[in-house]
Length: 299
Image 1 (spheres, rainbow, N blue to C red):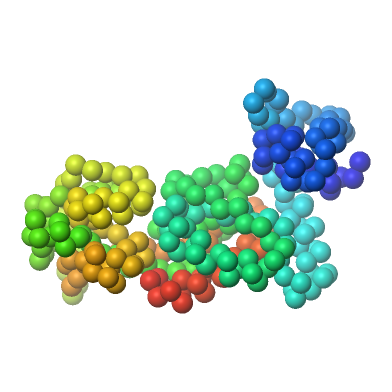
Image 2: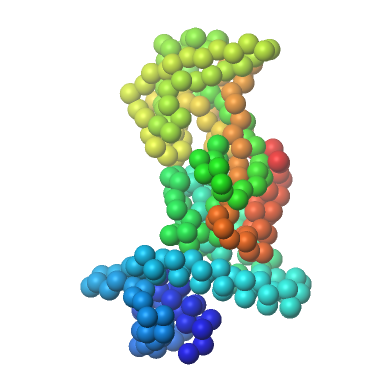
C-alpha cells in the first residue's frame, strides 16, 4: 500500500463524507477506496472512521490523522511544485473560506482571471459569515474582516475598508437626514448583530457614541444590503458593500464629515501549518484585485 496515496484517499473520504464521493474525485472505483481505508486502519491499528447509513465521519484519532495527512500531501505537492519550477503554475484544489456577501461582490467576479493564470487549479469557496474551524472544514486560506478572535492564528492584513452610515434617498426623504451622530437615536437602524447597536464616530479629535434602535437585526451582510435597499432604515456598512449603489446614487452616505473605525481584511491560514504556495498566491491575488477595484485600501 502506497502511504501517500492512502493518505490522499483518506483525506478525500473525510472531505466528501463518503467512499463514493472520494472515489469520484480520485477517478477510481468505490471498492478500491473502501479497501484502501480498511488497509490503512489495519496498518495503524486504530479506527479512523465512524460508518453510518448516511455519512462517514472521522473519529478523534481520524481527525488528528486527517490534519497530518493533509499537511504531508501539501508538503509533497509543494516539493513537486518547486522541482517543476514556478512557471508551470499552480495545480490541485484550493479551499477558501469567506463571508457570503464579500465573496459575491469582491472575490467571485475576479476568479476567472485567477483560474486563467492557473489552468490546473480548482477552487472550492466555502461561504459563511460565521467564523468556522479551518481544520475540520479543510480550509487552506480564509478571508476575515475585522478583529481576529484567534490571536494565535497565522494571518496577514491585505486590505482595509472604510465604513459609512448609508441609507436610500427614499428613506431619507421619509425620515429626514441626520446631521450629527446624536440624530441617529431618532432613526430606524438596521443592525448587524455581530457589531451591536452602539456606533462610535470621530471628527477632529472628538469622539461621539450613540446607541441606535431598530426593529431589524441581521446576522449576515446580505441582510444589511437587502434591508437598506428596501428603504427600511440606516445602517453602518463597509464601503465595498454598496459600491455600485453609492456610485449611482441609489444609496447615499450620511454624516460624511464624521468617520467610523475602518475594518481590516485578513488572509488567515490554518494554525500549525505552512501556508501552501496556492494559499499564498491566492491571498496576493485578492490583495491586487481589491487595490485595482478602489473600494478597499491595500495594506
